[in-house]
Length: 490
Image (cartoon, rainbow, N blue to C red):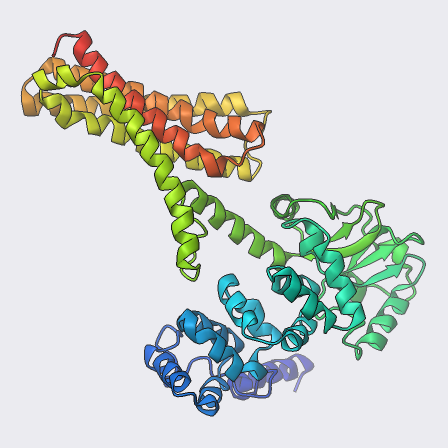
């Protein structure tokens, strides 16, 4: 049999036996199991109920037996599915199963509940299993005295790395970076690098679990280039790293905000990047898996901030959710009162011509929807650096053109419909004109408000919606009722 045929035969055998081989933990992969999972691979409600009943009965052995066969991701799901009051008991019953894989999959609020139920030494053991960035995420939300207790239980080297990370501001590269990386001097050869990686492979503390490139540093430990592992494997052993390394690299300062880090990865299609301190020395790396999490987190955060819904997490404590939502609802109540005051200026006209009261919500409501559309596009463009000072005026002109086109189309539709329904051409002209005016207001406010807040260094996702909604409500009522009085309808 030819060599290619031998390889093909081996591949077929591997594929056929893949489902029969145990996973890394030595157990078969039973993530799809009719006893515990439904057809969409979610934990069945009956299984979750059995776990809760065993917890209520105080039968820790039964709880452990039920949870032990689960995949780490399913264990994390189980913690999110049981009630908050049951999580401490569940954490205590299955503390031996709380591996780094489980911790990394947990929701933030659920992880806090679980950590609160464990003693400091157990939390320290879990943190020591994690990559530094994941360990920091585990410890950073603890109260100061709890942080101190956990850090005191850790090995000095791990404790120093986490304390160093915690010294940086939240949501910066210094807080999020991995301190496990491979760095070598530029004078060695490709063969020396391969030998080094193989010699250190048996030491779990010497090399990261996963890495895609090697950082090349000078005598001052400043990065001067990178070598992807694919290059290393294809290059003859005698070639020096300085001859094959990529010198043009993207360096991330430790103080860079996580959103800017994500934009750099997206713009330059990075897999990993070196993080440097104020002196330019290599202190860590950011990897694409961390950035994917950042992008998801930032996108969801902006969407929720626009709606004033708090963190938008169903595991968030009710008191925190009420506080976050109520504050925005109170602000919106104030803006609604302002809009009603505008309506109050025309109460005499409304009393004379009751149809004005029937039609005026249409103008303000459509303006609010149009403003929300423009606002969402603008906030996203600002977040992704698509909208900058270099193209602000062009973007404003674009949104005004869109607003004018939409206003004319909607004004024509509502004006014609009003004429056909009420047989009053003047009323149709008034509501059509008001629709155009309010759509232009929505277009202007939807882009000018977030851009202005951005220039003032205020997060536009937090405050823009209130101003835009107020502008469209006030202008919608004022333009419609004012035009009606001006033309003598009332």
